[in-house]
Length: 145
Picture 1 (spheres, one colour):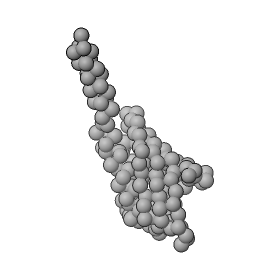
Picture 2: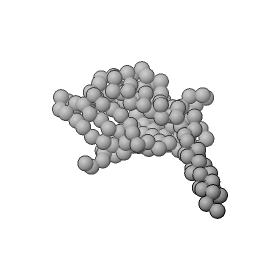
Picture 3: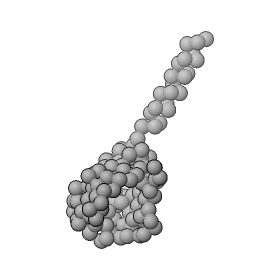
């Protein structure tokens, strides 16, 4: 009697593990998010331009909405200058040719010569254009420590 119950439990657990495995699109998106973080940290506006949708908007933690041009200018100027710009604790949800990724962005660096360090809860909205994913919108809310 114990053997069938154990076998059934193992099947349920195996199904849970396999169901939780990220899809190829999810893996691609999370990899792209990491690459964008690295590009922002490195001041690589050309790479960021490749990934952001032309109608991209960012809603900051203070409620200010900026567009593609403004965000590219900030990355190129490296102000703020990041020593760390990293996403973690992410969750991706796909909806056909759209995806939403939530997680936490941790930043460290300087702004106007002053040290900065903060964590932000973020939501990114991605859209598929042809074979490529483009970041269409982002929102960040500063987390209290």
